[in-house]
Structures are given as structure tokens and as C-alpha cells.
Length: 393
Image 1: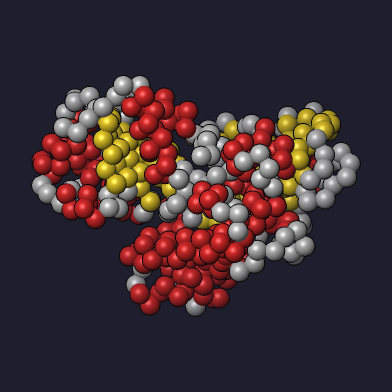
Image 2: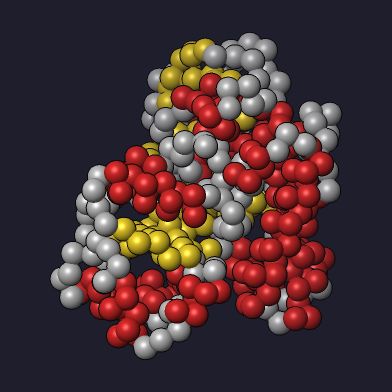
């Protein structure tokens, strides 16, 4: 069993009244987290109940009037766990009724996020719930639970928890292919017209192929053969199901900085590789993008309300891979596949010259753990292993 970094935070939520909702793509470990929380709650002496709505018999039992569902939940225990809660049509209104009744019932549920879930949460449960995003395993989590787990395996197969049950590379590829298929069939197919599934698959491939590069919606539309409006809708679906993330350029309107461009990253390295049908190692042409994506996915798990991720690029080629904004103050993060001495990369130097008030920056690389100063900025060099284990914003 791999210990998840988020588990301690979720355990603290058990004593708070708000409804706790875990959202994320399929098979990232939401059900396992619910069961771990249930075990913890039972160990603390709390009466619990667990409803897995992907089980047909249990779901049928929820096919009854709202009043009866409320009675069933309230009468089952003090801490109620509901897996895949989106399968009940009026579930957010049921949660609202239980919360507003003043009964001391804690509800903890999970959902494979969809546009419909977001709509219900926004309309019915504002102020009554806390959302937590659940991501695939980070390399740091895998390394803590499986001491000898090699970084190269993570870069090839990613962090989907189901992969930890096998050492077979062929089996891991099969599992990833099944996960990709289940996403298309279950989470996306219901949102698209049947004839557009092929276009959606084509878009997924293009996003995988162009990961980490600035993208143009118009260019994607031309390649897929659909309108820009349709492509934007597909990108929204991917983002709101936590499968693909867009980040935008950082600019203070200085000179030739790009102001409206964006880059995209899929939620897992293994999913990207199965889309590209490429599980080769460090000799592949896009290895630098894989390492950049590795850094992004770690940063993504660390987001808080006062933190966002951007990138920096100028029209004449100046570039920093990521700009973390914490309380609106920029922290540049540059990823270097090969760097042998503690020198300031050219793009980072340009950024620090333009923004002399920046106090800290990071260079994530394969070889160096070091620290130097450039003007007033402390530049930290971290290896990929050290970054995965120790990096804090």
C-alpha cells in the first residue's frame, strides 16, 4: 500500500462539518483513499457506512425518492462514504438537505469529475463542501513506498496506482491502454455526439504530441477538421475532467513577451506514452519534454488558492519553463536535461534581468544539487530525485 501525501489532510477533515468531495480522473486512487479514511474513522470509534455506487445492486437501492435516500444515509452511521456519487441524479440536493438539517452526519464522497458534477456542486453546495483534487501517484510517493522504484520507470509508465501491482512492462502498457479506453467510453462519450469521438481521439493525440509546446486553437482545429469553438469545448471537457491542463504565459507587458499563448500537459506520463504508442527510454527525441512534464505534474499537486503555474516566453526566443506565482510573486522554475555546472541558463538569466525583484529560482536537472546567487536571487539546483522528494513552494 502506497501512502498518499494528502491522507493526513483528509483525516483532519473528518472532524469538520463540511461535505468532503474527492474529484479526479478514473483509477487515480480515490476509492482506496475513501477506504483508508474509513479504516481511520473506525479506528477512532466512529460508526461508518460505505456505498460504492458503481456496484449495480447498491446503485439500484439508491433509485428511490430523495426522502428515502436521506433516511437511508442518515440512519447508516455518523461518517458516510459514497464512491462515484455522480450516479445519483439529485445527489447534491440530497447532500444539501442533510447538511442544512443540522444532523451531525459527515459525508465523504468521490467522483470521476464531469461537467455535470461541476454544475451541481456550484449550484447546490456552495459553502457546504470542500473539494480535493486527487492526482496519480507522484514519484516521491512511489519512491517512499517502493524504495528501489527507478525514475526511468516512472517516466515511461507514470503514476497510475494500478500499475504498482505488476513488474511486467507489457502488463503496464495493457493497463494504461484500458484506462485510456475507459475514459473515452465512460467520461467523454456521453458528452459528445457519436460521430465526434474520432475527432476527440485525434485531438488527444495532438495534445500528447505537442505537450509542453505553445499551441494554437486554430491550428488544432485545422488538423482535427472541426471549428475552433468545438476544439475549445473539447479542451474544456478535458480540463474539467482533470485529464489535460492548460497553463498560460506570464507577462507584465514588458516589450516582446507573449501575452495570450498557452501550453498543455496531460495528467499522467503513462497516459501520454500510451497515446503516442511510445514507451522507449532516455534515447527518445522528446525526452526533454518528458522531464519537463514530470516537473509540471509535481508542481500541479502542490497548488493552493494563492498559487498558480504559468510559463514565460518572448517573441525572440527567451523562455523559462514554469513561473510559479505565490501571492502574485514570481518564482521561476527551469528544467534542464543536461547541465554540468552551476551556471544560470540563458532564459532564466533574461527573466531575472527583466524582473530584478525575484528572490528565488530553481533549476531542476539530472546531476546538480547546489545553490548560487545571481544579483539578489538565490538559485537552487535540484536533481530530479531531490525535487521529487524535497521541493516545497
